[in-house]
Length: 498
Image (cartoon, rainbow, N blue to C red):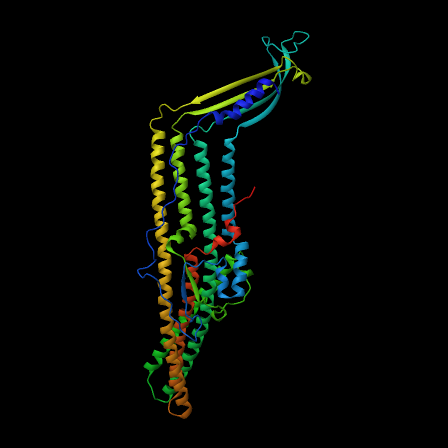
């Protein structure tokens, strides 16, 4: 390497230090926490009413400021649910796609950081040419103007980041990477919550199908008794027609329940990364689930730091802020430093000999003078896009608070519904027991027993739905509060440590 080229290389490397950089555009500041201290009009949600003796009927208490566990679904104490969620986290296609998107964003950020360094390239060429005016070393012995020319060359270029164009571009891509990471986390949390919800719904539908089948059987017995009484002349055809109508209505309820149950099973299969035909036929039951007694309730100021959709919206704001700096820098001059060094010779053995070397230094400045207002309006558009992203962030925060408030309301009112449904089922069961006793002692007909049995099964059907709602509401609360992703190393680690 010649002395001149070494000096050139040193100058190019020192150029960033000799040039005072001025980064244009606003420096991003995270939005302030929301100015509220509660999720609902109540200062503090009270304990959730208990319904002893029924599935999912235990009392629940809110623990203000408590942290969300990483694997919140384990609080249901269902090994089968735990196994399904582990399968989903390992095999779900949407989650894998989100992880790949994060890796793409990460590599794009790293690629842009390469613009901070000088770009060096090397090349060599061998050409056959004729040029009588060329001065070559060594001169051809026959003084011929036709010769083969060997030219090895090293080129260097550098763009000093005078106005922070590259810095803002890297900042923009890094913010996009963060947004993609939070989007991947949101997919993860939604996946676990949807799978828990699907398992709860399947268990509820299994119980509803069983209860509906019992109701259909009871009504068939009632119809048989009524047909017998009609044959004896005790009742008319209107009673038979009414019972046939009621039986047909009950039978019409069964296929939709079966459809919903099968669809939930298919959903569970797909969420866990399997084809519907590959999922084991094992069924869930509400009795196999345990309702958590203590429910964490994050502080409102903390919620915006936990919800991945809110954090994604904030990262989008950051990216939009950097776009303003990019647009502003594009309106300012751009400097490019270049250097080339090499050798021309007629033979490879003479490439680095005396008198063969050449080098050149260059500096270019390109400044926009007139572009019809294109870059000005691009900067204005970037500022408007930032305002758009700020409103989208505000909307994400409001939606997050709405989700928590809706879930708190559902927990309260669905617990009250379960209490009322269980009371109705208890009353119907007492009536059924009394009818059976009266029938046994000869004071009531068997038709009265069947009618009481029908009322009890209908009450049980409502109770089963209310029991499932309490489990689903609890899962929804964990999702609304952020799902505890910050305790899972695989989610908080960078996309690529390299």
